[in-house]
Length: 155
Ligand SMILES: [Zn+2]
Ligand SMILES: [Zn+2]
Image 1 (cartoon, rainbow, N blue to C red):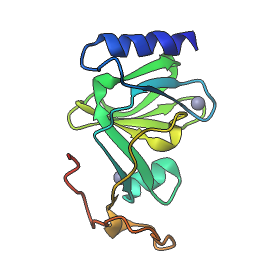
Image 2: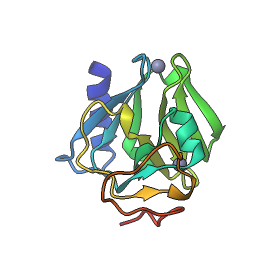
Image 3: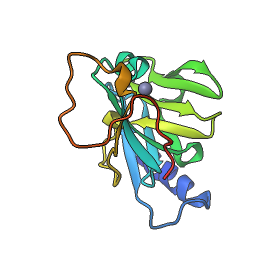
């Protein structure tokens, strides 16, 4: 975990992060790719769109959004497989295929696939989005707000 500690220190040194912020670890299924992310996510949502269902093989994808510079790869940088282009892509482990995060909003933000977090974040998903394209075999049983499409995520 030496790599994790130095990456965490680097995140704190960038200045945009106050030194009290927790640093969370995350990793892929096989453990080859690891990342460190500051526990200051700006929003978290459950996305039911077909892309999120297929990239995760699940009913929906809980994800949490944060400025891209608050996430660092701490191991396996060389085997991160990018699907998309520099300004918008999904980042997978080339070895096991796990979806770790997506780079979105013209490269400014990352949407961390919350299932890859090792440490529990402070934030919780606050809504279901793209419910209009949700899997018919899945029923949402919680009381969170549901949106047919996107919701303005900020705030
Ligand atoms: Zn892996
Ligand atoms: Zn989606």
